[in-house]
Length: 350
Image (cartoon, rainbow, N blue to C red; front, side, top):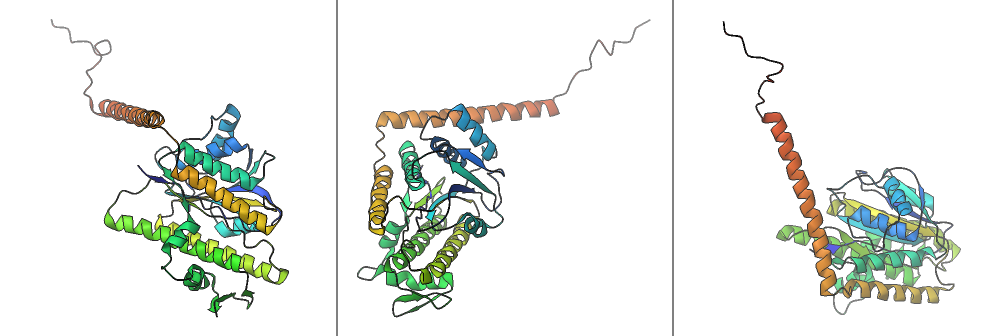
């Protein structure tokens, strides 16, 4: 059974924060309120518990307690899509405004590693621990969706403009306040994100129309670094455009998956590398690691057999317990009981 664990990693540029926000579905079915401080392995286990995946690492007692304090018991339902956003450039207030009334649980990582690296490792480890999970990289999906011989950025820039309330003039995105987005990197990333989300939604709709089995959970990934190094006169407007495009993506994904979409948003104030050029190289390395984990899980036949046996045993035990519970309830409600001979003695015959 193919699983698609929709992880969208977005690294965007300059903000004062270093935290991870867990965002519930639009019916707030999976997360409790509050906030927590959690280890990296605990966050990995929390993500696995939220999405129904196998954890990448053994979960200790402390991490298990942290997970129980965040997750609602939900053994029979899981989100259809989980989107992890790794965002440098948005504040905690921006995240709260983006997701509105959804339940939001801020978490602090008690780890010295840069949060962007930690999030990439989390995704890579989860993909390796779940060989049936496919990680969709949205920028790669955007390239595949391009018409041959056309400029991908120009091909989708009109759609971006419509999503964020902007316009396009001579191949340049004109934002709603009149600022021209001349930075090619950010414009290309916005186009790739827009095209990648559209491509995945079209694939989901096509499977539904064809009557094909729906994946357990969808997974998308993308890294954006375009806000890094923008001039002050462009930064505020560009940040607003990014927020609007993310809001568009949230709405579109909710419609495609019936509102069963959860998010994981990491915010931080600096990228893993000091310069934009080095940050782009870091993004390429991170993509290669995730692509290797997604394409070549490295699980041998024996490991896959153990994985199948564990899942089969778990499902079988649950079905068996459910059967006996229902059968016992039926018997208690419908069995004819004889009168107790100690309480109701037979009449004496004279």
